[in-house]
Amino acid sequence: MINYNPKEWFTFIFRVHKSDTVRQLMPMIVSLSIYVALVAFLEIEVFKLSENSHLKNITILHGMLGFVISLLLVFRTNTAYERWWEGRKLWGSLTNTSRNLAMKINAVLPKDDELNRTFFREHIVEYAFALKRHLRGHQRDSEVFQSNVIIDHELHKPNHIAALMYTRLNDLYNQKIISGTQLLFLNEEFRAFTDICGACERIKNTPIPFSYSVFIKKFIFFYVMSLPFGYVFSLGYIAVPIVVFVFYVLASLELIAEEIENPFGVDDNDLPLTMMSKNIQKHVGEIL
Image 1 (spheres, rainbow, N blue to C red):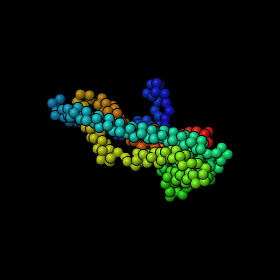
Image 2: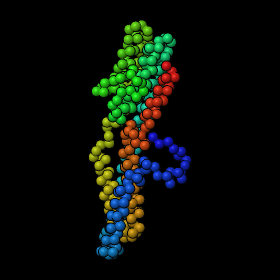
Image 3: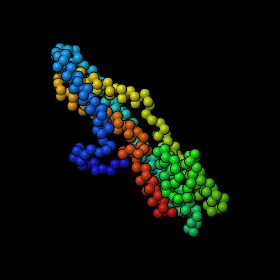
């Protein structure tokens, strides 16, 4: 995730970041420029269409459809941002749940029970890292601990880690180290782990409907490709940068929505899951 100062206007305007949509759209911008220049050349130099040509009135269609495409892109962008923000809230909940569980474990376990303290410290932290890897499609052993948390690659790692902690908690109850009330006291945090994991999987595994995404792309394409036929009459060759700019604005909104609709990836504007996992590791380590 990119950290920035929102007050630095001139930095934003004149700096081209690798995640800037201009870089991604450059091949299309060059191709579109050539296309618009060719249409302008044919209309002005070859066919020499007069001001009375019916093609001039095609701008009426663009005026009517401009409102429709604006509504579609606003809905598309808002939907993608809602998914991004929900993902951020879920990982904020994971951070708080991990802290609360660590504080409760610290309160109910004897101070000299280093074995169980180490177990929960490592597994609470590993749950966050395992969930990060699960959402990003990475399958490997612990990136935090050397040998204590090794999990079969075929298993659902977050669920398996939560199950191990549940089992250890039940063993503590059977050994009379914690009471039944304390067992229920701790259950809410363990349940929250699974709820958060399920909600994250819902965001990741439910993309924007295919037909909706395809329709917007086709709409933008045909809308922009028809622009030069009408605007060449009033703008001449100046229609080239004008049409390219319209395309840049519309296509950029679609690209931004595509990037943030899955907030758990590794794009520049996705959530910093590694940093948040390390924060959980730091805070749980301080408590336990």
